[in-house]
Amino acid sequence: MPRNFFRRIEIVFPIEDPALRKRLVEQILAMHLADNMKASVLDSEGVYARPSTQKASEQRNSQAEFMAFALGEASARKKSRSVATRYPKVEVASGPRERG
Image 1: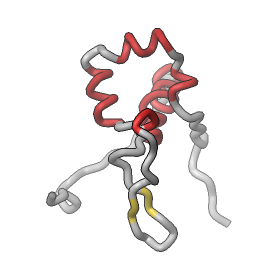
Image 2 (image 1 turned 180 degrees about the horizontal axis):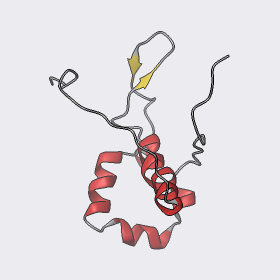
Image 3 (image 1 turned 135 degrees about the vertical axis):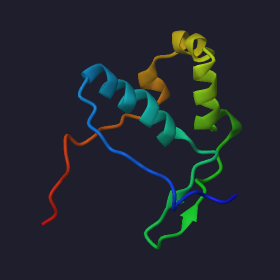
């Protein structure tokens, strides 16, 4: 599939609202990082590889989960288990770190 690397625009901006920042980190970013079906991992040699195959019960597809979430199906799952148990803990730096 061809990718649009030369005509795309990316922007970065601060998330100052604490509630939105918490949602981005604990829900959206964590959902992406938990993906082990469609994800690719970049190793130290610059080669992308798929994560190791997991049991069917442990497989996570962030795109499917986002679609289910958008359709409201996630609300039923949310009642049965908390966000903290569904996704790994993610910590975000408060700002850029200087290299020394």
